[in-house]
Length: 219
Image (cartoon, rainbow, N blue to C red; front, side, top):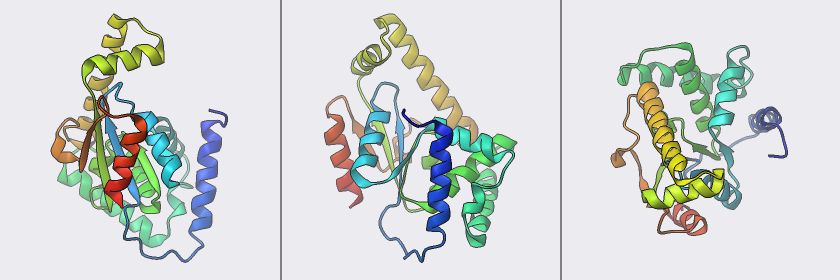
């Protein structure tokens, strides 16, 4: 990545602040796409290619986590929304925590606030972080990417230069950690297909074809 992640976030905040000064029409089309994925199913590649195709911004776990960390000491991210938007964020946090019977801690509250802020601004692809659960109240499209284990293992071997055994361990560990994260912070099952609008087997489709399917689905 040519730019530091901090610089990417600074630029994102500036874009949001500029957009907040414009008269924005009511949006009817999908403005947020969430992508959940099995390890090795090329989730990042699909998300990045999709953003390039439709002109959305990509928010992966690194960016979202740094936004959460930044928000611990600064409200600048949340203040990119107007007062009405801020009120919506606070309502979402309260309702989501109560509905899903979550144990409220600083990280979970900030995570929901940041995801909701991203969702309110729109034109975003959010990779992971349980965003499909948190943003159900918005006009979002929820995608889940899966693939046969053998193909996912080969993808991991190629990407991380691992042997078969370590690639298998990486997949098991990564999928378990992601499932635990979603369970803890949204009390949902990341593998439940009913939590998604579209499930795609990337073992049978290229990244390009997967992107085209998602584009067709949201237009």
